[in-house]
Length: 171
Image 1 (cartoon, rainbow, N blue to C red):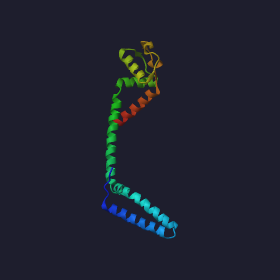
Image 2: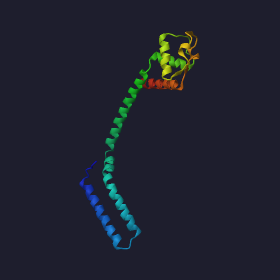
Image 3: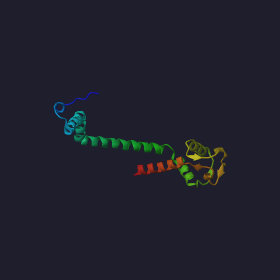
Image 4: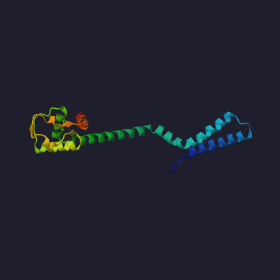
């Protein structure tokens, strides 16, 4: 990766390199002093920083552009979150979600095991939202399906997430 450095930075680099050379000559020709060592080290450090100076300056002066890019990215993230929330809301039918909520409340109420309810229970079990022994062992009719089916922590988390996503999409 090559960077194009402007003439002013090359001039600064040459000046600092020249001062560094003069200080090194003074170090060799005279009695060395601690201040001379510090000056040489400081200038050597500057020589290594000059290539990054353009980046620091452009970042400082282009703060408006940077904030604009951050705002654009923020808007894209909000749009993506909105779409993801919508997809999440649509990942389960409203009736299945309502049944899951009733099971989580522990008071599903009376039921009749028809094909639709049986399919929903198999689906909810397969994705880990409910715990049930064998769905076929559940009586065909009963006063409370919650006696046979328990909602897992994952199922409870799904309910909470969907509830919050629905509230956000309304607001």
